[in-house]
Length: 267
Image (tube, rainbow, N blue to C red; front, side, top):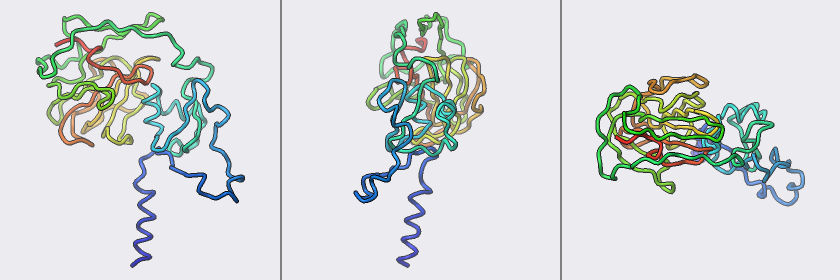
């Protein structure tokens, strides 16, 4: 029985890993006799350089892509990863396109502020057609003149506001099966359930600056690399990896989470 339990314990340490999760390897534990022979993680020559990222315990390519504002598939291609699900703690990855300036070095982005509803207010009903109301639309502008107007992805009550420390987006109530709409034109860079805490997740890339994320869906209706239009149904609301039916919606500017209410039209 002891041997059987030991075997089960050994199996569980690998089978529960999230796809793409970096193996947590303590290289120092191999002892002084063998440490000299240990090969350093790939990419060490780029450690600390702008446009590169050092993998930490618990990272996945999907999480790194979300936090860096890039497609996980692009990250795999830029780093010549034969298996994107195998990245190593301490490995240094390129997180900007080859030949491009790091995203952090690009000029700042300005957003036209809009009034934010009170914390306990409920969202007024509106048509689920993906079109912003006649109220003033906040416009996200880039230095090259490219502009984006965001629309609400679902129609429902605001459950929880943005708090950079606790909640990297907003949570919006709804019923199971309610349509989830693309907040702006974009390309699907992720559609799956490989990021813990997000459930069934869609990530859209709108341009070189902005991503939006749509989490906890019960069904995903788009595939990676698919182009979508503002107002297009991309998923159905659900409660995957959470305690109630809701949409967790994030806006990421160059990978950094920002308050979605500053980008959405008042209603």
